[in-house]
Image (cartoon, rainbow, N blue to C red; front, side, top):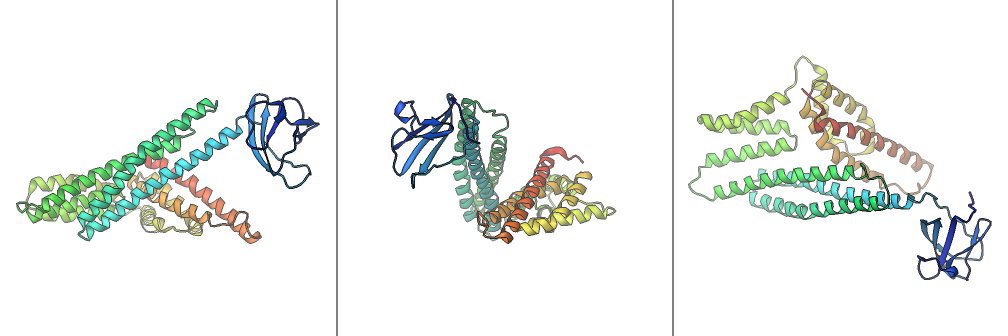
Length: 368
């Protein structure tokens, strides 16, 4: 809708966006049509004001002498909110990338340790630990700056950066887990180089550490197997056996299913075998209903560990699907691609909504 009235002002500059109120930069208003006072060639740098509020800054390419139309939003805070949201999403992506690096780091050092390459595992873990330790305060500083700028611009800041804060807290928590694991790994490496340390003790330490690492990544079957192997090594040492048996029994109790509840067994099998392998949006579309049923059943019976495993796999699944969305042409090349893109976006939105439910449950809303 063309706008009229003295409250709406347009200023046009040839070399830079005008920031003052010079008469020469103030375009003439002719019943909703704004005309610069002086000729401008090539590009006009336009500032739109509503009263004392800046609405937009627009570069306009000049190709001929015809009228050029641009659409602006007259909400004075729209530009600030859009810019803040853009920077918030960019920051959230960087923090999420840090979380992915953490997940893959755990996977890498687990594989290296299983191959007996403990020194390489320690080196790789320390590289990631130091890198993310440097990034974490930078992320917090950016969050604080965005919060301060939002307040300065008069925007409501309650919850605007909550997801960034939440992901950053998860990043910090997992940094602590990684730090403790690397400390234990370093002690193990030192013990291996000490001729006075028995080989059996080193083996038990390795098994316990592997069990704890598998448990932190929700690989509970592998964790139980490592605990059982450690218990077999210390069967003649009651003190050492008791220290291992306490976490083993707690995990075994939490991970067991009721043989008389086939629905729970089916739900658990889906979460362990099918859910982590969802690699495409089509996979998600085919299995999202089964995922919801499995989640609902585990929530009903208080299966906290299964829900936690589902949550830990969620980040990888969402990242894979998000990457698939980026491959679509924008705009779509044809109607078929448009339909595929619309379907993919809808499935992705449903996935994100479901993952939010899983995350809330994994944060402690499920009780057994």
